[in-house]
Each structure stands twice: as C-alpha cells, then as structure tokens.
Image (tube, rainbow, N blue to C red; front, top):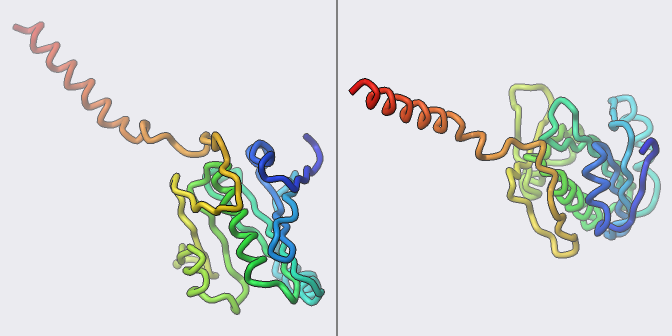
Length: 197
C-alpha cells in the first residue's frame, strides 16, 4: 500500500500494524479514537517542539496523538517518537494512548519500547510508575526503556493480538546453538574413538 491507512477498530488492526513500521495513535477524552499507519517515520526537531508543539498544546480539548516508529536499524525496538497533547489532556487519555502503544509492541513482537524525554515537567518517578526505566545514561538527554521480551502488559479493554510478528526477535533455540555444536563435536569424538579401536 502506498498511502496512510486509518482504522478505529483495533480488533482488525493487528495485520495493518504488522505491515507498517510507523503510526499515530489518537485518543480523545479517555477513549481510543484511531490508529493511522504512516508511510514514513515521525522525525522530530527542537524547533518543531518549541514552535508547532507549543502552539498545538495551547489548543483546548482532551486529545493525545502519539507517534511511534519501528526503526529499520533496530527492528526489535519500538520508538516512542513524539506525543502531541492539548492543554486539557487528562491522565486517563495519556494512559490510554500508552496502553495502545503497548498493544502495538505486542502485535509486532517488540522486545522493548524506547524514548528520549525532552519535557522536563515529566519526572523519572512518573515514568517508573508507567513501567519505564532510565536507559543509556552515558548519552546526553533523558532516555527511557520499557522492556517486554515476550511478557506484555494485559489491558482488559484491548483485544489480544494473535500471531505476533516474530521475525524481529531471534528465537530462543538459536541462543542454544553453541551447546548444539558442542554436543555434535562430542558425538564425532566418540565415533572417532570407536573407529580407532
């Protein structure tokens, strides 16, 4: 597909999420509104945050737009790229958007979600309450990660995605490759000893 696709039904959205790397989650008044799958990633700059971001935040209403990316260079990670909120955004609306983000991570089989926090008003304590922990402290900025590794939070109002996309994560069997080679080498040694007798 060569155009953005929007859905308001998460029951049918899992296949769309698996096909597209970039999306926008929209929540209004504490209720999921829509998920738009984009063709390109959300790129953000400090200039946009200081100008367009502040202008949009001054608008009324209880709305959140959450932009996420699955970078090609790190396909097992979901990047929370940007959150656009209005002046009257409630805690419930923000929470709902983050719950949908976790659902997207599960549908794609992501190992973790990562973000860089530029808003100083959001504390590390709040991020910890939401399941995020500090990450990459050697880098400039405030980086956070929410790890899954196959264990995703469950929210009653969200459907359970079936058949998560597993091609981003290395299967557990491949991690035991070294022991498989060791067992095979041991069997070869035993066979050589029998032939030598």
